[in-house]
Structures are given as structure tokens and as C-alpha cells.
Length: 297
Length: 201
Ligand code: HEM
Image (cartoon, rainbow over all chains, first blue to last red; front, side):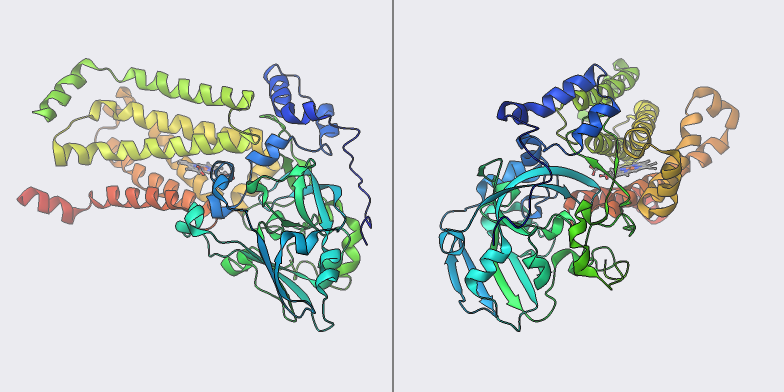
């Protein structure tokens, strides 16, 4: 089942390791002497962000609400002996070790645009496994309609949990056909290395056509269910965050215009770029045929 | 006594360095944004740094009167410099937002109208403009009692600044609520009931 989607962004034409390590410094330096023009930017729009960008600008409220908090605090996350509970409408429920769940499945590199609801974006070279492959391994029963996910809670290691900044555990969900779409992966690495804790180690969801908060991190439970499962931001504020949360420049958000976004890592004079429907992943449009996406936002 | 010593010291410490420090801090943070020291999203970082400093300085300005009435420490000679520095950072905050972040006049207008937290921030800023313009000796002399009346606008301006911050955050981080609580407390001590108690005590 793997390899059902082919990268449209490639790393080859982009970044030798020495480059992605310090792209930001290069850009910042260029900005400092006024060299960053719009042409440099246009090419930049589809270029993977540097590893340091990806690891230093995160939303992971378990580790604090500031963008730099997760990088500072997520070192405490204990990822040893990780297990994932698989339950609900599955043939093979149980506590899976990481190896039981994904061992032997094909890990691919997927270079995806990643669009946060806060109107910033990055491009990330993930290493991950199609979620469909994992679902096949656990055996989804025909009555299942949705997949629910839950993030680990380690209160003693998570300052945001101690401070109750939002309700925990963080939960998310997808419709089964969304979960089975070839674009949907469970990522374990970035740039060919195990991902940093602040990026959602040891295993996280990546759904590139939805706002970033749908791509739940550090997963400890996967449940197959027959009703639409709760999702954290929707519970906090249903008017602002819908269950679907597909990237959609035409559905304005009360806080942020979704018409444009700024790719991080472009320095102090980075321009905005237009946000694309489904974050540019038009191949998912069929999933929502006949749905009014202004109603099901 | 410590209070007397502080008050005597203020005679020797002028207020003008506050302006220099404010401009230097703003300039340094801008420079940090250029060099990458503010992280991979320096526009938002700078916007936040300036906004937070504006709010802190506005609050500092509100502290001065209660500090004098409750403790006797008199820092009134620094109040204008603190207030004007607050306005300076609020202007820088607005400028970063409009020129680096949003970048299109049509969208600036649209955002101010459409997003309540931006509307509130803008209202706070607009209230500060006449205060900044009249923060000089000539205006005080020319306006007489009206000057004090006009400068009561500080209270709604700071309150709106605090609400602006609470409104824009997601979830329940502590900081904006602490700021707002401090602002409300500093406004509350200015209300009559508190003043009477003090007079009797
Ligand atoms: C007296 C005036 C103002 C004060 C005291 C103030 C203060 C603040 C503070 C404290 C923050 C949060 C910083 C942080 O998270 O650390 C903030 C954010 C923000 N302010 Fe203001 N502000 C003022 C005026 C304005 C105006 C006039 C605008 C625009 C018209 C504005 C737009 C914003 C925006 C868009 C943010 C959010 C930045 C983000 O996306 O993170 N503010 N402001």
C-alpha cells in the first residue's frame, strides 16, 4: 500500500545537509544587508524549512503556549517503552509497542507543506508510514467510521499540563476515508532522523491538507469508532475550530484571515503568500464532494 | 528612611535616559530580528516584544500615583518619560503589524474592522494619541485643569490594552490574565471608596 503518493516537493533540488542546518542564518544574513527580494522568496516557498526552523517554532501546549516553549521544555518527554493502545472497532485490539504497530511497514519520505491555523506555514520533509497501512495491520471492522487519536499525558514532565492551559489529553479525529487517504501518514522522523520531541516524537499524525492542530502529536491511543470523535480545539471553541478544519482560504477564521500565510524562516521582511485550497492538495477534494465546506469547516 | 533616600536619589537621576533606553531596546530587538536571534518567525516575535513592552510601560505609568500615596515614594518626575516610551512601543508594535506583518492597506483596514482584538488594540492606541501629543510642559500650561481630565484617558487605554492581550490568546495561559488583573487592581485603587479609607487611616 505504501508509495501511493509521490512527492511534488523534492529535497534533491533543494538542500544538502549543510544547507538545511543553517539556512535561516543565511537568509537572516542576506536580509541584514537587504538582499532578500521577492524572487528569492518565490523559490523559497516550496523549499523545506531548515531543521532548526522546524524544531524551534512549535505549538505543543503540553509544553507551554509560546512558540519556543516546546523546544525548551519537550526534552522532558519520556518516549522510552512507548506503547499505543488500539481499541474500538478493530480486529486486533491491544497495547502495541511501537515496533508491533509499525515494524516492517514502509517508511517513506514525504515533503509536505504544513499550514498552521495561525496563518504561518512551513515545509517539512517527514519520514512516515501511510496510516492506511497501520489500520490494515490492526484490522478495521466494517462498522468503523472514524479514527480517534489521543496524545500522551505525562503531568510531571509537561509544564502546560500542570498549568492546565487547555484541557488534556489532547484528542483529535479523522473520518475513516480521510485517515485512509494516501496523503495521511504517521510520521516518526524528519530529515531522515528520529523527530525531536517538540515535533511529536515518537509518532504523530500528519494530515497536510488540514490545519496543523489536526496533526496530533505523541500518540498513545488510536480508537476506531462509529461516531464523530471529539477534537480538542473544537471542544474549546466550536465556532473557531471545526472538526474538519481543512485548509480553506475562503472560510475566514475569527482570529486570523486564512487568505494568506507566511512561511516561517524568511526573516524580518518575509512576504505573505496566498493560501491554497486544501493547502494545495487538490487530490483530496473528492473526499468532500457534495459537502458545503463553509458549513463543515 | 528608605523612602526618603529614594526620593532624594530621584533628584539626582534625570528622566531623559528613559527615552534613550527605550529607543535602544527597540533598536536592539529589531536588530535581533534581522540576525535570527528572535527565532524563525521574527515578525511575529517583534510584534509581540513591542506589544508587551508597551503594556508593561503603560502599567508602570499607572503604578506611580498609588506608589506615592501608599508608600510615599515619589517617582512622578519619570511618569511622562514612561508614558511616552509606552506610546513609542505601541507605535512600533502597530508599525510592525501593519508594515511587516499585514503589508497591505486594504487588509490593515479590514483587519482593524473585522477582528475584535485588533479593534480593541487600535482603540487603545487611538486613545493614547492625544495623551502623547499633550505630554509636554506647554500643553499642561495651556490646558490647565483640562489636562488632568484629558489624561484620565490613560485608564480606559490601559484597560483596553489588557483586554486586547487576553482576547488574542488561545487557551488559558497565565500571563495575559495576570496583566489584566494588575491593571484592574491599579484602576480600582483610584476609586473613591479606597481613597476614603486611606484618608481616615
Ligand atoms: C496601546 C496599544 C496596544 C498595546 C498595549 C498592545 C499590546 C499587545 C500585547 C501585550 C500583545 C501580546 C504580546 C505577546 O503575546 O507577548 C499584543 C499582540 C498583538 N497586537 Fe497589540 N497592543 C496595542 C495596540 C495594537 C494595535 C493598534 C494593533 C493593530 C491595529 C495591535 C495588534 C496586535 C496583534 C495583531 C497582536 C497579536 C500578535 C500575534 O499574532 O501574536 N495591537 N498587543
